Length: 112
Length: 113
Image (cartoon, rainbow over all chains, first blue to last red; front, side, top):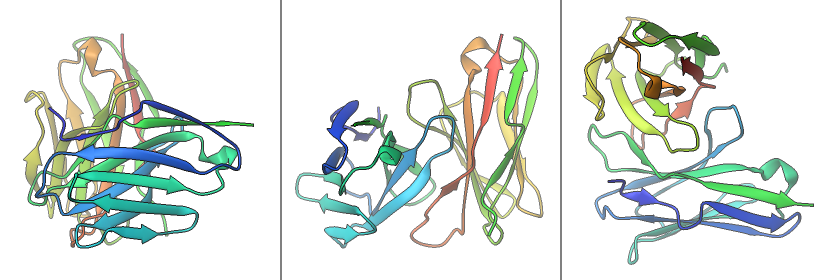
């Protein structure tokens, strides 16, 4: 089975609000995590990453938080905009030859 | 800098046929990954090529195969197509360094009738 999963398949937020997308992982050996955004009909787009020796990393309007104690990853999007509507995937890299393991994704819907 | 490119964009085949999908990585990247994304589902890892060699494959039958060329571009071949092979096939490339961030192409939408 998948070692990475998302708690909610769909998240609906008001435009301008902050969004929080959650992800649970089960492999404590994972040392690198990535969030991707996939718009309809397009390939996943890299948003932000974090290594296991960090617990927080900020980008432009996005923040990723890593809680290794409970094996939880979250993506925070500030001041959500219509262009943020997409499916968001978290992925973990366990190192070696396994590549990335993806969760099923969370569909973020922005309400006007 | 050009991103990962894939061809064709869309493809329609019938059961039993064979298909070849192509991917060109970001310049300077030596690793290419292939994923299958069935409609409404997550990405399933198919194959990983690095420096011309197959490094790992996911839980897919042998009719899924591929190769990587000296210029690091890659092909994915699927033989004896089945209806459930209908999916978006995504290619990603990375520099092979650590951390190994993968950058994706737009994908090839394969429909098997």
